[in-house]
Image (tube, rainbow, N blue to C red; front, side, top):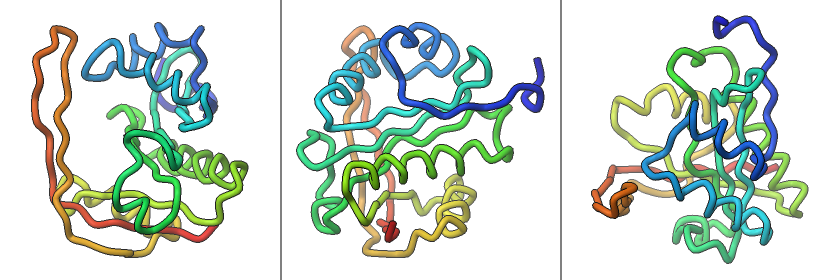
Length: 172
């Protein structure tokens, strides 16, 4: 199967799909997406996946007020926040990122919000993402700022991640 063959469908991740998702779009630990499903079940998040048949080719999360990862920037801008957008390398530049963002925007609207936000890195590696967000109507809100977190792998070993970012918002 080549990336251009199947139709790609974006939908909320379900518990029954978790193993297939983890097989094709693994995260830094095996627990992360099970925990995200718990937040989704409580209405604090929407975890969306782009599927090409049974292969996960992209992902994105929307966090709402009350979610422990809802950021100070989202609080400042009073909006739900897009997090963890990713498209598998072989599937990039085919509209999957845009489809994920559109579906996340729809989820925010369905929850009664009229704005949405996201943080994006200012390094060269995020140039394509910034261009995509601009095309989709996201405008500068504030920044730059350092976004930092500590993640844990399956063995419990932690590792830091950080980057210089700006925050962008969009009216829905």
